[in-house]
Length: 261
Image (cartoon, rainbow, N blue to C red; front, top):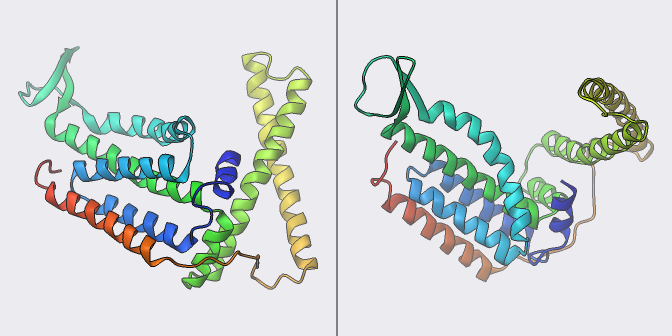
């Protein structure tokens, strides 16, 4: 998470207006979610990955590690979608017989699982493009100008701040435990993990109270205001974004009959 924030403040698109990057990521993610075509979803995934690595300047090894995180969560869900069990002979089921049950994958289930993976990873790649190229402060500024309710914006700001607070607090507690021979065995690991969770909850409550006192002492009135650099919208970049999304939409529509759900 800390590396993501570092790249957001130091990348090749740092000087680009955040509204352009937000619009590109949002429109492309919308196309990916609405696309009925597996080929269209894969095209969006590859396009956003190439843009993040080649244009934003994110190292491909780091980007690959980020993509492996949602892929690991998808793996458990895909198995339940793709793999089928049948107690009767099923010619459409490609698999093996196991203890009197046919276990395998049907063609339709394979298409559904593949589309689920491509749609999920394609949407995540859009979010990674935005988070790796745009600081959270600038994203929040764009949302404010788009008339997003102030309550949601303030919650996003505070939650984003507390992510780093909890990470740093967890690191400090874990370091203190390890220095006292913590986690030296499996049973000790369970015990120390429980103590870490309990202490983290207590520390987070204290830090939230400190944050409220700090904001109140600075005349907090329900809105957190930060300084934002002035950026200019570019017609050339706007046309480029529109052209890329138009091509991706055309690919999705042109290939929607090739593989259906």
